[in-house]
Length: 347
Image (tube, rainbow, N blue to C red; front, side, top):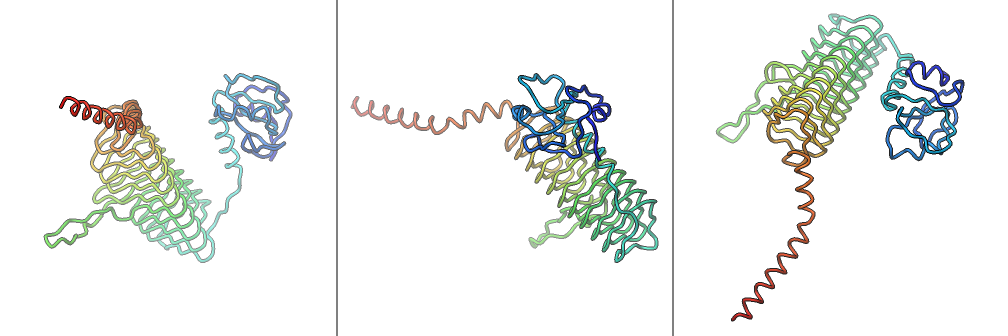
């Protein structure tokens, strides 16, 4: 499909600088774009590409200062990154998707299936499963007994959703993710063996949750492990039993939350962040990559770093000192040598 700059600007409510009739039929990175494509510029590191790009249209922030002549038509918007994301969503919605139940899938007679759904080959749909309209279940997915999947949700190939779990509306679960496996519960015994504690709860994903590939979310020992509305979990993240993750929190790859920890809403965690069990994290907290959070954080919107994690400004000051340690050690050795020489001279 082709779109003119005017159509795009009208959709985004942006200001056109250049030819409103120029057309694009694809999107591209600004540094790789060719004629007929649309790109965006939001990161200052890429500013120089605006003057060399071959893109026909570029989205830029309204406050961007143009320093020299440019070739593409510009569309000025308050936030170019958000505008670009909106265009990609529009393009995604325009795609056609498969519907119907493919051959070789297994669907229980007791399952309740909504209108316009898709179930791929070799998918398994257990007893009393409920699947909302417009949902898509891709090949080789396993949907256990009594699972509920909301309208418009997408379950990609190879996903495993254990019995009794609840998936909300418009959720996306990427390939290989496991929802509802047993929590890591074992009771030490007097003979040094471990007795398994049955995990009889479930997992609840509220609406608009996205789970990355090969992520794992454990079912609760009792009650529910809860992922609140709008949460985004990256690939290879792990959520342990009885954890609660607040609305619109995002977490990058390889992060993990230990059992019974409560995470606030609107938090942001970098890759490989780890949380100790049974702690509480306030709303709006941000943690830099590889932070280790061992204690509760009660201050909202705090930014932490390090392992154990503490306030990022204090960590950065400490790190400056840490980097100076080799020089400080050399200075200390020199001082010790001078003191020793002084003592010897006094004798």
